[in-house]
Length: 421
Image (cartoon, rainbow, N blue to C red):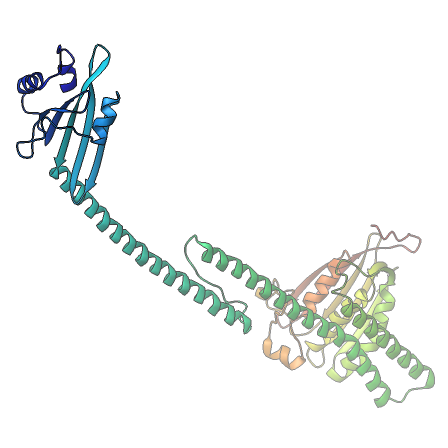
């Protein structure tokens, strides 16, 4: 504004500068200088140390005399200093310049307060960051210690132990994965225990048969043919025990490999089981009878059918009363082969009928321990029956006895075996 006021003057002199400035009035700045084109001061607003008539070489004035608009601002020691210089143009030539300088302590105080507030805010923010970092570090350390503590518990064998951790951070994800791992370990342990239980129960049957046959030979007087027959049965049971041991050893190597199908005459199996268990029934005071009618051939996996008949008949003898009876009936039909094992034993309570095929379930635990039962026999029987495409059912009244019925698909003598089916 001041520079444009000078641009209409005919000549730029000290008198002209004083007149124009007096008309414009107070500029409200610390210092105002008007120079000619040679940087000689024509007007200086300072009362003390007035430099009128002298030459000035301020950087801003030098640049303004070259035709540039100049502004510079500095902040130092709480004071904001602003410097500005604008050329005075007359007929498109530089006739001089107007220079202004302002010392603004009020703005400096505002900036100083702003600096102080920023410093305080930075300190507070830094302190907050350190506090929160400490809290997060402590919390993370606590959560990690919790995970490590639970890992030590699982390492000691407590596979059912779970980590309860809330949140959505990585520790929670780690705890979730850890719980899944313990579930797998627990499942593996259960499978291992189940395998051991099943293996021991499977191996017990041929061992019991060998024991019964050897006791019969030692306790009864037999002719040579009968003894030869019993010794042959002991050899068969030994072979079956060997096959079982081999299957158990190779079970983990090829879980998907099933035994081969064979044609089984269920009537002959019942006769064989009868010879095995008649000595046990005599010692228990239980009458054991059997009846076979019709053609009773079926398709079965190796040794499964024998295991089914043996377990059912052995249970019927064990859980019977002295003076009771066990009757085994095999009947061949047009479409199926039916096996019935009926006894006059202790029977099964009505509320237990739905659970007797469950693993480790025992109706009368005291009697089961006395008879040597483990709660695995019937569950294994059901698995073997279903594996051989059969069905098993039971009818029982407590105190009157039970009847187990197993139905297998019938295989005629002239039918071919198709392993793919």
